[in-house]
Length: 273
Ligand SMILES: Nc1ncnc2c1ncn2[C@@H]1O[C@H](COP(=O)(O)OP(=O)(O)OP(=O)(O)O)[C@@H](O)[C@H]1O
Image (cartoon, rainbow, N blue to C red):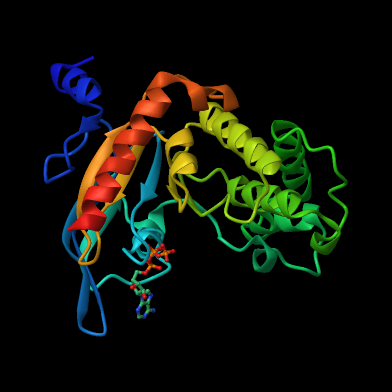
């Protein structure tokens, strides 16, 4: 561990990302600005996302968590700035995106299997390769329900699982998840948390997650990106280093409790300003 990192671990935080790149940076965001109706949301934001890590974004309502993710994922234009993935543009990068509302995200006229296969079929993969990739994902996710069923025949958690499998199918380098747990019950949240960690360990995919829930934000994260109120800046980047896989029992681990309390303190401080 470098001196800087030990310092960061000692006080539970790392410095706010500035122009100096992160030790092993995957996504580099420089000078990002965005305004809505003349009201600035982000002005000249610099941020690095570390490679192969999970970053959770947390902050006050309306501070721009989804907008930031959508700009990085290319779903929303920025007014100004540059975003590079290992020095490549978005067009040269494979990304996956899991939408907040799984109910509207799946194609209702396709079976779960066909939904997962869809991006592979679109990229012209052979039938045999598509089958083998879908089988691989089925095994990775330990799927016990029938993938020949249609979305409306599946539970919410099963539909969200299918959404995540579809996003992962083309082996993305970066995966974006907008509130992946918001519509799930606790049992399904635990299941998806486990699966996301397994996938991350198995594939090394870089993940950015937007979360409304402090516990969810901390649980999966290597770094929690805490945003201020609008006009939005980075309040702090909090590191959370407990080893993976993390099970539900870590919620009573002193380090989890400490990081959660620290995150809440920063959040409260920002709300009080
Ligand atoms: N297309 C748009 N046109 C105008 N304003 C917008 C648009 N999209 C977002 N905004 C505004 O920008 C701000 C950030 O929105 P965003 O949805 O990114 O925030 P968020 O932090 O994800 O919000 P929440 O916590 O409510 O999910 C909000 O004030 C929102 O009203």
